[in-house]
Length: 328
Image (cartoon, rainbow, N blue to C red; front, side, top):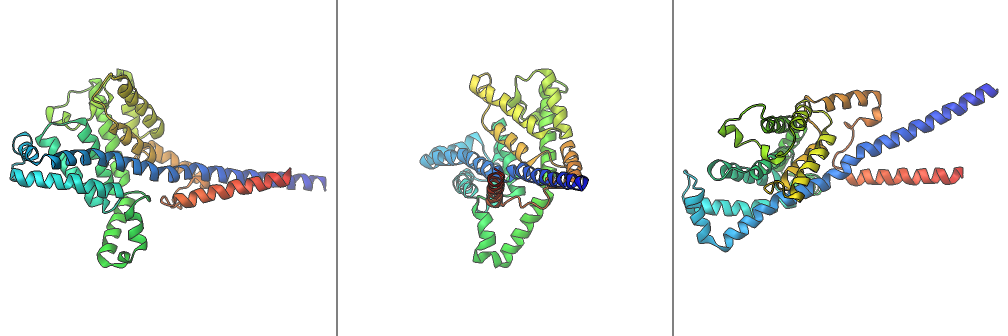
């Protein structure tokens, strides 16, 4: 009898530990679900800001805007007035749509095209490259749950319209199938930039125009090589993001490299939040852990339900407090 009681007690303790583990795992997995909508909102705000500022300046001095389109960055297939008007419309309308998260993909696409044209026919800058990368993400993935797109495609009367259903279906397919490929391409792009910074190869002028190497200017040789390897293999996305963010922030604060802006930090925040993507060590490790510890499996988690995740946390805390009070 004593042995049976002891076995029952051990089994009960094991069940409690298993329940506790599941709750801790749910908190760990849910952290990204809760943090991502706010990270996404901050990204949309800071991406929209320079466009709105530029559009305001052009609208307040239209003759200068036409002169710029004529002499500074002429577009060969458009008249200067048309180019200036098109650019102004994009800079004033598309960023507002992006910020609100309404028709986000078309707005991001228009802004990305404008940045690509600026990079090709005007002065190429690292800021342009970072903005293009983040806008490409929104074309592929769309906004998070703090957006009008999230609500009007689900809850409004328009959600039943045929064209809206087709748009939602395309957006859903893109969100489910393309982000991993995008993240793979992004980390290879950053890795190549670090190799160029380390002097491992000399990029052509055409290639150098599209590499954001100057964002990490000042990194020692061995650090650049190490992080290039980690990016190529998709290893330790969060530590890599945090470390490179610290480096970029240090450059900004110290003034060592004044041309460094906030946008590399935002792009690294995207890498941290969404992971290393396809063909990565991180993805393989996550799959192995999910098989061994099913509580860590994110496939059944609604990545947009951050409010539900918070409610789940609150219920866990309340249950834990109730159990603690009863045991005391």
